[in-house]
Length: 154
Image (tube, rainbow, N blue to C red):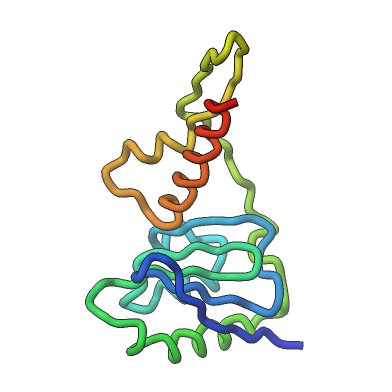
């Protein structure tokens, strides 16, 4: 059975999610440029398109952030067909199988709340201190923000 892809909008109007009928990866990775995708030729091929700004690869989808000079309506069909073609040229595979993730804890903090010590990592919030927060980092930051709020409430 081959890959089939459908497009799905996201809260960010510059990002479109291309969902596969098969698993693509066992890790979630963000690529801000083609050089970061050295081990995944499929991602490098997508970066060959002039309007691709960044790519997020996850379990069964690829999210693509486009440049702001084009509308999705102008490119979505061709992009969906392009991704489908690239995926079907290869055997069905786990594209992140040979990639090892390096964990970085840039900032950590311990808070004392209600006389109990509760530890939580603010490493994801270190990303916020950068001037350019990339997609889907914004969504991750919000997720971690609400998790920290829950910890503070308890």
